[in-house]
Length: 132
Image (cartoon, rainbow, N blue to C red):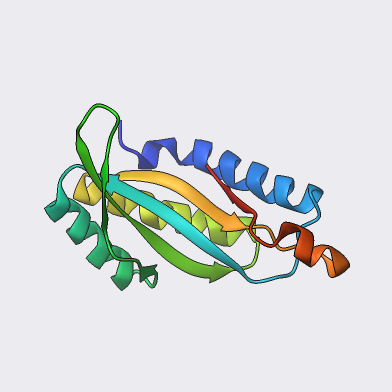
């Protein structure tokens, strides 16, 4: 089964994350920095995914190498885009990124963003980040 076949689960995640942000008091109409996560144990595949992701209109961060608990190594990068919390746009982004992940045989690992408080609550939540 491909990752794209699991898109309905990501749609649910997108909806639940938006609802959680709004219920917690995050701004409904703000532009959010959305960071989609990719990972692979093969740097060359990850690099190809990063190129495809850039071509799809996302900003791509530099790849990082992380050491796993079992001693293995994994490489990862983020695909960054500025978006309102719009379910249709986030679902379209998920579709595009899942297709890239499948094409390049890397793992799409969800997305996260920063909490953006309404009004006077801004200082209290300055460093909050929500992700899968």
